[in-house]
Amino acid sequence: MAYHTILAVLSSVADVKPVTEAVNSVAEASDVHVIGCHGEPSQFVVLSAPIDVPDATTIATLYEQADERMREIGDAFGKACETAGLSSEWRAVRSPGGDSAISALASARVSDLVIVRQPDRDASEDMATNVEALLFEGGRPVLFLPSDGKIAAPVSRVLIAWDGSREAARAVHDAMPFLKTASSVEIVVIDPDKLPDIDAPLAGADLAGCLSRHGVHVNVTTASRGSGSTADAIAAQVRATNADLVVMGAYTHQRLREWLFGGVTRAFLDRAPVAVMMSR
Image (tube, rainbow, N blue to C red):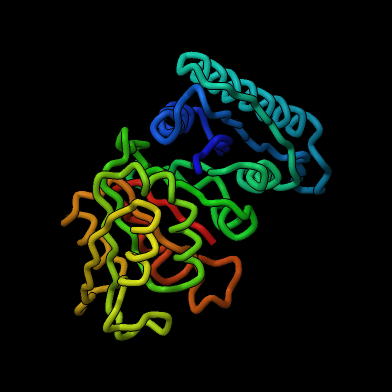
């Protein structure tokens, strides 16, 4: 199992370099095809006060700016892939909302892996893509790069945040190419006695046995969140193991609300210092 088709979701030119470099980090350049995707609105509606008449000049300018962004990002993507020797194609998509993630859903469903860079909130960058849509509607694993875009090459140390859920099981399976090439894999279970899908006395043991039959040898650690949060406890294990990558399931708060991140997923992703691979 390997990642042969990778989707790069690009919100801006700033995403191009780190995302294409990440593609090279997770796959052999000669054996991967990367699809670059950026979305822009298919229509603009601008109202001009005080009579609420559409301003045709303003709308035309917005279309021109959208076309320029697509060209700029597409050109940067093409040059980056050519430099890296990557087989690539560019998909600039117009959709009603113009969201790059929504526009990329069709491409995500025919890819092995989706890569997106998280925004640098300290630099006032906003998440310009609907990453919830990628996870809940794309049907494929998503690799979130930290805001600086860095990922170890190769990924040597992997931390699996295991809670026994369907989502976590999916993430572990999807991460198998990383797990098989890693030099160190750590399974961490936070407060196993409080997890409905975990046999506390054997927390992580069944997963370790399953992975060993794939040639992946792991260590299992249990920890308590104490007075902090589960996200804090996982982050502490990331630091303790010097992990390059975290693998975890993505689910909403109480697994009921489909479009709002909650709980551990959002809390950890917001502060993750390393790349995070999530599946749903």
